[in-house]
Length: 374
Image 1 (cartoon, rainbow, N blue to C red):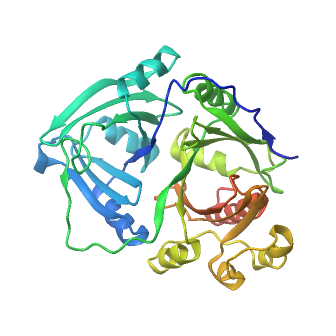
Image 2 (cartoon, rainbow, N blue to C red):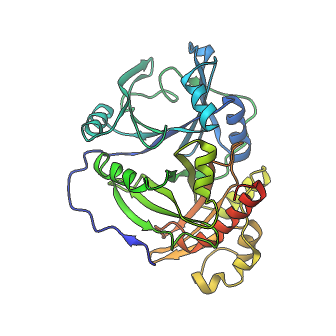
Image 3 (cartoon, rainbow, N blue to C red):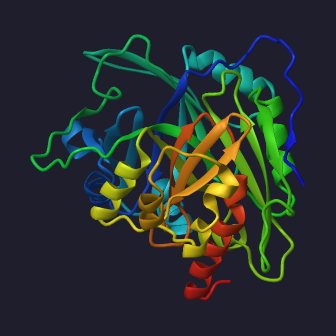
């Protein structure tokens, strides 16, 4: 079955204009060690920190950056905190997807008036570098969206943070921006959250995949891709589907303790160079069988990349009406089999690699089998 493409949107005013992803905050057991890993393995650069040295007494945060991608790692400094409870339930994982807007108060007001549950009311924060306004709403599971307005701020990150400049700083690997972020939700919850993004945030459905599109001999899932008005934010939403064995979404839900962010797709302009650099720094990727490459060109047509390099690194290729894309997926990067990363390069294609679903999900099932969770 071909993906179902949403009808062309009506020309209406975007009540929630979003400039892009501002940052992604992860609650983790050890913020400093997590930042160290992503700097050394993924090439992120140190940007800012906040903690006891800056007057915070309940938490510590480290911020790393690579081109337009900012990751914030936050850990509690005491027991009995909400951050600690989040980590206890979910393990290390994404808490906040922050969205860069021109007017955080308006974004909060518009979404709450349409049914969003507030996470925190608009708050103005300031220091010698200016002021920011932030506000938050709840979404699936314990995940939240934070609206960030920084028009009048030129500091290193946010008020309360100072520059972080450790002596050891390996170089970047060519990651440029967040292409999309995938959320896993429970049985029969996908359409509920599709409706949330449509009605509360004004998103449109780009494409839909059912269990015939995304299935193997053993497991299946369904997915719908939501996008904001200018297309800069894309949120695929997955839910489990019936299969002979436990799907990857079910495994995620079991170990994460509910819905949450399954993976972050980050874009590069030179995927072969980026993946080779990541591999050499210790990042581990899922592998598809070598036979995947035997008929690759007959399936996707001409590509610019060297086939042997793709085969060596395990990079997948798919084509749609607008071009082709190259993609590869890491193994889980946290102790629990939950969060992973996708590295993607788009050469015209605007799709999500439907032609690779079967090979990819069979690779994930081999990992599940090794873990004893299939």
